[in-house]
Image (cartoon, rainbow, N blue to C red):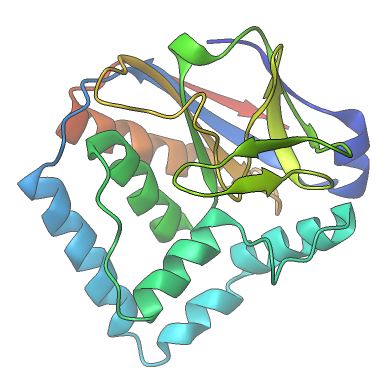
Amino acid sequence: MPRLAIDAALKQKCPRVALGVVSGQVRVAENSAALLDEMRRCESAILNLPEPRSVLESATILATRSAYKALGKDPARYRGSAEALLRRILSGKQFPQINTVVDIVNLVSVETRLPIGLYDLAHVKGDITFRAGRAGESYKGIGKYDLNLEDLPVFSDAEGPHGSPTSDSERTMVTLATTQVAAVLVSFGGAERLHCSCERTVALFAQHANGQNPQIEIVS
């Protein structure tokens, strides 16, 4: 696993930011009936709340919005991935189904309300810094148009930005050929519950993706 650090300038604007890193070996499959059942239960639990839309006002979601504002990015236009997934479910759509490892990360993101970056470590070059995007930086988001990264919190390696709490890049995305991953849980509200959320990710990787040799690291 490459070394991961938080840039001092980002930390100054978002002082409570912390990252939970889960890395290890996985076996990626197209789908899993057991995992799909967990995803459907999660959707039902949200939709059956007395006030389903209250999930959008959770402390974790609000912390992500506040961080985006502090960095100079409009959180109504550039949403954290957890909020985007919750809004999708609230609109009556189901979880997207990509592959087992991506689906696990999306499930944990909705459960924890935390945006999560997911990276194929074979395509990460050197150490990673979590920093604010710079003027002129962009990349092709997964299944999306080019994403304007200026002022957006990004993960950047030796080749430049490759991920963000809003949308990761195609360069380091997880495919059926991936064997080693890093999932980075992004909390702008402190590290208190990150280890528990990382353990949930490890358990799901083991159950649904033959996860092996997991490591957990908290960076703050």
